[in-house]
Amino acid sequence: MHPTERKLTQPGGLAERLFRMRKAAKLTGDQLARDLGWSEKTGRTKVSKIENGRQQPTRDEITAWAHATGRPDAVDDLLDVLANVQQVHRNWRGRLRGGNAPVQEEWDALIRSATRFQAVVPTIIPGLLQTGGYARAILTQVADLWDTADVDAAVETRMRRQEVLYDTSKTFEFVITEAALRLLPCPRPVMAAQLDRLLSMDLPNVTLGIVPMGVPLAVTPPYSTFDLLDGRVIAESPGGEDEPGEDESAVYARLFGLLMAEAVTGEVARRLITAAAVDLREKG
Picture 1: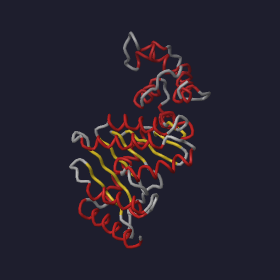
Picture 2 (picture 1 turned 180 degrees about the vertical axis):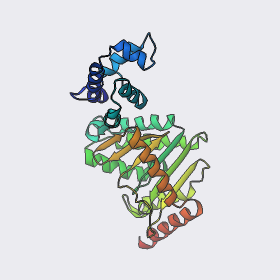
Picture 3 (picture 1 turned 135 degrees about the horizontal axis):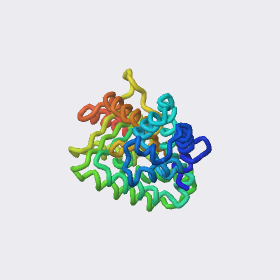
Picture 4 (picture 1 turned 180 degrees about the horizontal axis):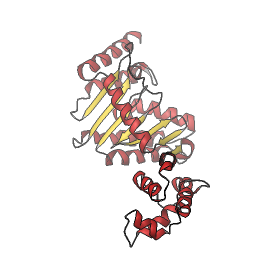
């Protein structure tokens, strides 16, 4: 059973609550479908699918259902339940059971299918902008943490994915903090090459925003990474990935906009990268 269907059909869950509301209103499936303006041919089937957890209702359908059954007071609570249903959690232990390369391949397909990719990656360089050496250092850390052994294949897939940056029909926007330029998850020569890569990145469809250190912020960057693919949110945590529902996704989209507004781009961002590269060489 899919996790979403399991949430819909759990005791006291959304499907059961909608079913009980219809019964309390003494409406048949046909009557409710007509009241909701659903097709005479498919309306009754749709009611049945929703009540049995085989179809997830939309926000508008839940609102209309509550009004049609005389329970407009239940709308807010039902929409909260829907938001919980929509949120999907995938833990890393399960995701990485077959190795990291398949996960990288899934991401490859997701990113290639999106036309607008936005990412907040607070403390490391985003995967699409990584050099091979930097990617290897990061993916080796993941392998050590989760006991996977396919670092070479994972690096190869991640690097191949960067071809998508040259598709000018797509846009890419990244927000990092200045800390990502100065933390060393890899040897110094690898980090130096990584900073050079950022300085050489000059594509019209790619924007790199850097939140500088030592300036007052209206909003603080989160601890963990999150990505928006045409508005679809995937948030990473140490334990896994979360895909929030509609309401929460809107918050992530707003947060991205606020963080990008805090960030510096263009020549000012280049100066931060150059300063980090100079410090790296001097301290090496």
